[in-house]
Amino acid sequence: MRFARRQRFAAFYLTLCTLAVVWAACGGSEQAAPPPNIVVILADDMGYGDPGAWNPDSKIPTPHIDRLAAEGMRFTDAHSPSAVCTPTRYGLLTGRYAWRTRLTQGVLAGYSPNLIDTTRLTLPGMLRQAGYATAGIGKWHLGLGDAERTDYARPLRPGPVSLGFDYYFGIPSSLDFEPYVWFENDRVEQLPTDSIEASRPCCKEDFYRGGAIAPDFRHVDVLPRTVEKSVEYVMQAGAKPFFLYVPFSAPHTPWLPIEPFQGSSGAGTYGDFAVQVDAGVGDILNALDEAGVAENTLVVFTSDNGAHWLPYEIEMFDHRANLNWRGMKADIHEGGHRVPFVARWPGRIEEGSVSHELISLVDLMATFASVTGQTLPDDAGEDSYDLTPVLFGESLEGPIREAAVHHSSNGTFAIRQGSWKLIEGLGSGGFTPPRSIKPGPGDPTGQLYHIEDDPGETNNLYAERPEVVARLSALLDRYREQGYSRPMTEASGRN
Image (cartoon, rainbow, N blue to C red):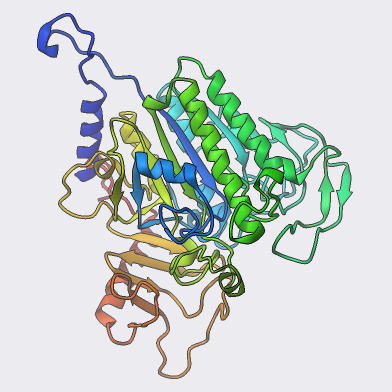
């Protein structure tokens, strides 16, 4: 099977001959190549059209993200598994779609209990099995504790340190959700004993909700402190390979660029905040250089969903945060879930390369398993595909993924296979009105688009191509019913 073949490839790679052997032609001795450090930087609400490498007309300078693209592989057809953040974070860290859990729509709140089953193999847990030190720094937003309402006076277990992270430092959820606290491993730095009023009506600019807050917590400090802690971790890492997960809280609201970045873009406060995000990426890349580990570090940069960028903002700034894709964050259309994605590994991934392969953020788990010479068990990473053949420039007989499932904030499903995209239902399923449309007599009940011919999703072919609708509907039903979508090993009996 293709998955098993990729694992054999990874095993072969990890037994490359050392350059320092005494015998000529590398024939007398073999030594395992050192496994790479792995850094995943996840922006929050950064759109496909924000970085210049994806949008030459962007009004937001992103030299550091663009540097990554120039030094690695840029993907043009990458997707978050959901158009909102909690389910995307679940998918990234488990290789499994979040709609298979209790979270079938929306996101968790700041007092929600832990979402990830502690018996499940996670991405950091898998890498820890391979001998990695594992750390996360930034926005968690996957629930803390097991009580119906999180008690921040108690140890925050289950939480990140129950799920494969050796170390975690960050905030519980989005920066506009209470309580506003920092936590380290399973304890808050300060209890949220004070309260704060909402900054403004929902949900743009410097908006955050009112509620409990720690006495010393300042919203404006979160992005700088996340970057500072990430840089410290890189600089202090020892000889052990490390996995560093950096889920930024920005450029999600509240938009709070600090003084050096104010006025630095042509896209208002949002653009300035995105410039600050890019600078944070640059600080982490510089730390890798200064620590002397950049050459053996696989860096991935991406976003958890599309930008929350409204039509009036497009007109006001002449900036298309989601490029020309239809919709925005939360929507089932492309603007909700098509995201920037770049991977850099010097000497392994070709510089300045571009891939048009259909991929999903759930694919990181199988990909990192392959990179570290591991095989996923059948009860882990159920929706994750190995991307190393694409990253390493292998000749492919066909697409890596059979299909990808998309999901909106209200729970609307879509499935993409090749150039065809089927959406169950009418409307955006998210923030763009109309969110839901009740079909009239004789109207199509769903949406079908040919993405290659119609990237703007303007021509609904649902009624004209019933055979495509039937085929994709059956595939989506199968994925939902069987509990997985990736190929399984021959021994599993789940092929």
